[in-house]
Length: 110
Length: 142
Image (cartoon, rainbow over all chains, first blue to last red; front, side, top):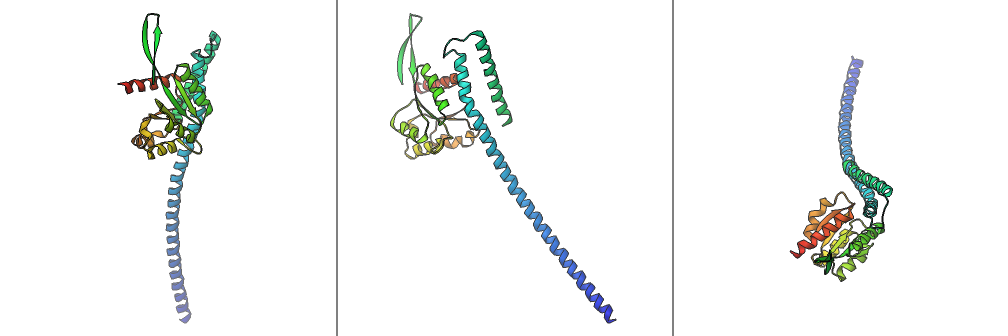
């Protein structure tokens, strides 16, 4: 009888402890979930900011050297630096078309 | 701005404007290229590859237009604009932002409020730039 009582008591305590443990686990899981959500939120925000800044930097760093390339190509084509033969003109037109293509690609993808 | 009479087809005369432009950009290839083109088209072009030096030039001389790059080391275009605005000197000149940035429009309203005239983005055809500046002058005359 006594043994039964002791076992029951242990079982009760064990159950009670198990409940308590489960409760704590649940709380921890909840906290962890909230923390995960919070971290995900921060990371998501940061990654957006990082991506935006990176894209802006790429955009700026490609367009800047493109400015004199485009400018001098136009000036050469306009024969501002001297007469061109037909072959030279054709090649420069090709360069000019490709610069425009590159500009369009930058606008489209960045 | 100076006006010169230009003889056309030996019979008629037309007026053309010589503009005095200041170009502030840390990229020497860009200042050299646009400067060459403006001079080829009989305009006067002054350049600065440094924001602080550019600010001094704006404060000490009158230009028909100031083309100002934003992203410059040490003293950026934004610093130039703030320095001019603080001294109430920004509206004395036509300050035109000239940037390769994809984001100037985010801050453009604020900069216009501060007294910036307009914004152009690089790369830009030299022809388009000249045409823009010449129309600017026409608007100014009107």
